Image (tube, rainbow, N blue to C red; front, side):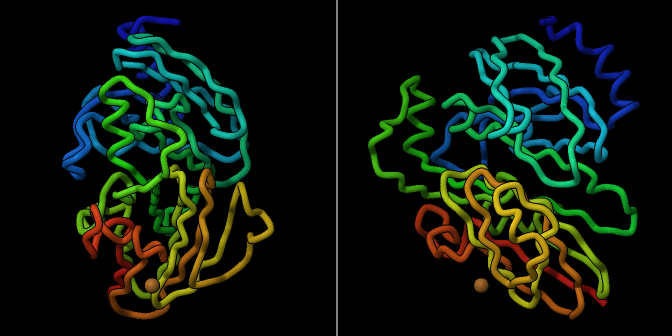
Length: 284
Ligand SMILES: [Cu+2]
């Protein structure tokens, strides 16, 4: 383990080789959800952002990732959630973890300790999705949140595991509608005839069933439902823990909603419209 100050040189060198190369575990406030006091995020720099940073890698190439735990408590990091075991990183410590060579796809990474996961420090690894400059690439980190559980973590207690799970917020890239429309990664804004890819990761406890108005999307990759690769549907279930890559061909003009088909997931604290709702805008 190295001290934080020791990572500067490593970060500088490896940024040249791989692009986004460090993630900082940071604690801060989340303006989107008034009931949430402090949350945790994976940020690209030591500056706080309420949106988790994504990591991009080339297909089939192993690499390193530097994780800086700038939080005051210990966390457990997993570079491929559900595949690799966690690495414990103490407060103020830095770990260099190796990312294996992977096939093209969208993968989850982040904290797997109760507090780290419950307060939202999780994001996606995009492998081999940046290859074509003509392709528009978007990403949706999906999550559901129960603010009572988050308050428990903030008070230093564990949420009651036997209590019913009643999430009251639903987000895309840590934004809830209508703010999703201000996020250039969540809002699909393309030109007629464009082909775009959408990297989707479900970090929540619920499955999220995405309903596209106006378009059928094709499943290009999926870690939990590989039998659905190649399917072209207007409704796509994204299971809890899943990473999926979708292809959308913008073959008609207009503005179309896309949203979780669970009605509770298109509300903010019970008020419609909100939550996991964004738009596809196809321009002439
Ligand atoms: Cu719909």
